[in-house]
Image 1 (spheres, rainbow, N blue to C red):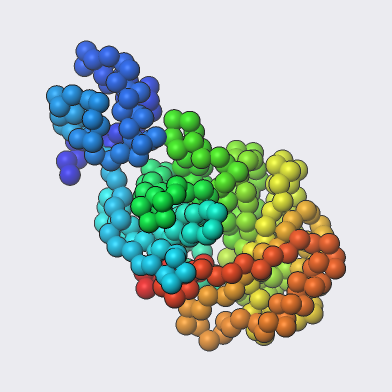
Image 2 (image 1 turned 60 degrees about the horizontal axis):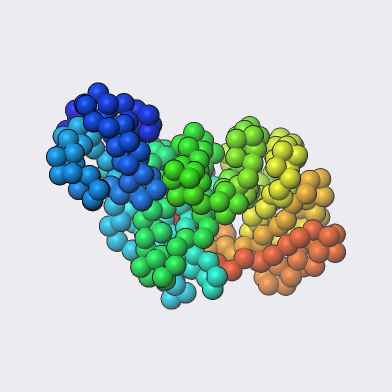
Length: 345
């Protein structure tokens, strides 16, 4: 890979068009190439078939597309597909395709490794190597969309930032990727079909409320008791629940959208009446809904799913207090593709 070649995906449409004008070629060629790159997701100049061979050669000699490659995948008995994707610099990430009766969802990563230290998550055990560039996030979606069409004969309907890494710790690239994904110049996917899942960075939740008010927000809460939450998610000691609540209120004020609290109930950790009451009190302070999810084991004996009777108790008490609650079924567990399990196993 020559160091002299320019990464064309880092250029704007205007910059690409300017290159052609400087080389005595029509400006509209810039729009053509921009469409090939972003709307069609092409990563090889030779696939740009409405360009002459001479023009393609010019591009090959001046530019490069630092694309990502799907190197292998596993398919679960429930149809979920876990993908290992190689980045241009030799790093790897995992992404997941989750099919259901009426939709296919891409679960995409935002970092190589993870910045956080959640005790129950396998990805947090990995060293954070770097943030993903916005075009690498875009690549994941193109690759998974192609896979969805090939395997399930339908395009992606939804995107969730729930893969490897904390999206709000890679804010600029995540936002740029969302804008490219939703743009008419890009994949033209509705922002209403995009969900960003965060472990809770209050300052950045407020910021995304301003920049991307049409997407959906999910927040990994897991306990509304400060001390308990800090034990299972140590980084949260820097972000008190009072600050988190303030940011969630701000989110609703700006977007009029409910935040979804992702909540795992573990045996002997947050399975007592006091935990249920704390969650109810927290939920009452700002419009929300609660998503109770299964714990996907990563080999730590301290974390075990609570008894079904406790889950039922959570549901009953939340409903009694007029708080919307659902139980989310885990997908891809048999291939370590479920939430919290992405760690190249």
